[in-house]
Amino acid sequence: MTFSAALTTQIYTMASRTCKYACDMEKSVLVSNFDKRGWAQVTSDEEWNFYWASVVSAKTIFNVETGYRLQDDQIINHFPNHYELTRKDLLVKNLKRYRKELEKEGNPLAEKDELGHYCYMDFIPVTFLLPADYNLFVEEFRKNPSSTWIMKPTGKARGIGIFLINKLSQIKKWSRDSKTSSFQASSARDSYVISRYIDNPLLIGGKKFDLRMYVLVTSYRPLKCYIYELGFCRFCTVKYSASSAELDNMFIHLTNISVQKHGDDYNKQHGGKWNIQNLKLFLQSTRGREVTSKLFDDINWLIVHSLKAVAGVMNNDKHCFECYGYDIIIDDNLKPWLIEVNASPSLSATTVNDRTMKYNLINDTINLVMPGGEHPDVKWNKTPPKGLYGHYQLLYDEELAKQDQEFSKGKVSLGSGSRREGKVKHAATWK
Image (cartoon, rainbow, N blue to C red; front, side, top):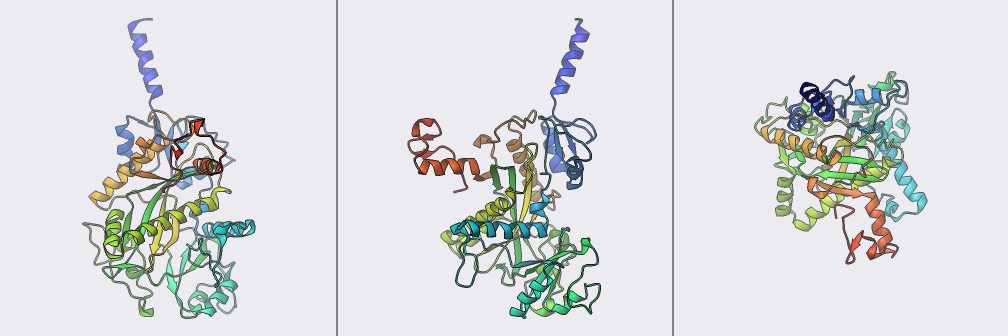
């Protein structure tokens, strides 16, 4: 072989080993991470190894009619039916089913108090699907006619189409025929979820806020998930008021940045955001360390059980991982409430700190789903070394949790290599 031919072969071999990525979003926090790894960009129609796809592209890839077959060296950032968790109506449906299953099993997690409320699984506001549950909603509404409810389109995000109501007549005007006694959606796209509004939110500086937490799932069966420590709070720009006269003021009630950035009081310097660590320090100083620790344990608890609720119905494709954006509201009793889960949390940066955080989020995510950093391999056991966690923290590992249970029952010997001196080698949860 001539020198020229050998050089050509070497270049071809190096090129073939280069990880090829496709990306539907021209976000700097994504592209910068791919570029620093020396990956080569290709289109989604070419051969790729790593695809950061939109939910629309993912739907196309997993559509059985397209006949697309993923190879062992390809991974993508969405599970085929992620919507079981990220569509508001399906999330509610799956959580209700999960709680009923726990009840049938006689699981103590499904225990209820004297008022019929779940003691441990009460982390989502009372919610109904409209139009299907209209009559059930009316029955609940009439039990407490002074309550406020929030209506959201099932398939939209960024605060689009959301409004608050405190009268049944306010719903009927959205009906095709207001003369009927039941709510009628004009089409499937007009279906809504209606939830009891958390009208006693924890306030800081008199303003309402929510939490955006990032959760990475690398497998649903067994469940393996991680929580990112650098989430943030999103603040409203106007001080909170529960007055009926302010029901239409979204700058008081909706924390979405896409809404708040249009307000006169929006601060472009900090973007109306506060990182989670600052929130923890604030709560520790005002409410105490023990109470603050319990709050974040409760948040982790609700995240794990929301994932367990969909694990059985999720298509656990080995080529998939997903980084979800969890939206959580804390009430003034320091009780967290799950509001919704986003399949494509925004990667746009509103401030310098925001960009740094999201760049690190993508970097740490890639490190966990592709520990080698060169090529994906779906056959690996999806247990990355702890040194690659970055700002992620293990939230729950179902395999390790089962090992712990067996160990506590005396079924796992200390000499098996999985335990040393009676201690767990790897933690199974955030605790």
